[in-house]
Length: 138
Image 1 (cartoon, one colour):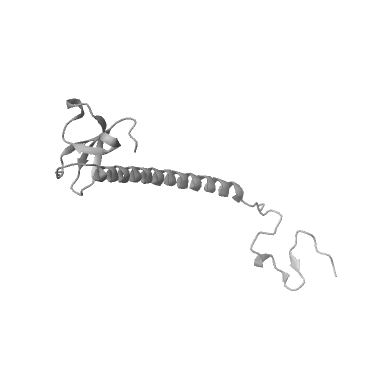
Image 2: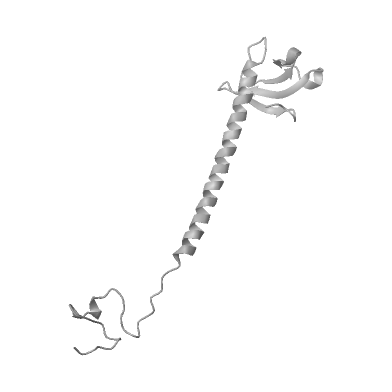
């Protein structure tokens, strides 16, 4: 059998099959280059990981805020008071005898008690901290 030149696409079973190939086979055809998918993947992974980290930090911050709100509400409901709190009113939390917390209507500048925080009762019966001592324990 006669040897064909390298530039001719010939197959023993199909004969001249250049038109059947999914790529160009002549000498003047453009070079087939593989795309650099590693760089694309690395960039994609980096961007997605930054987004996940950002979302995680956001959720972590919300979680910490929720925990702090829960702790203040628990502290306020466990505090001693001899009145029924009114929704929307401002109350002051102090530390009294035997390290027991109590709520009062008296502002911190009107007497000498260990001030902890200024609280307000919302319509959902949730205590909101308006102001707190710098080194408050919650």
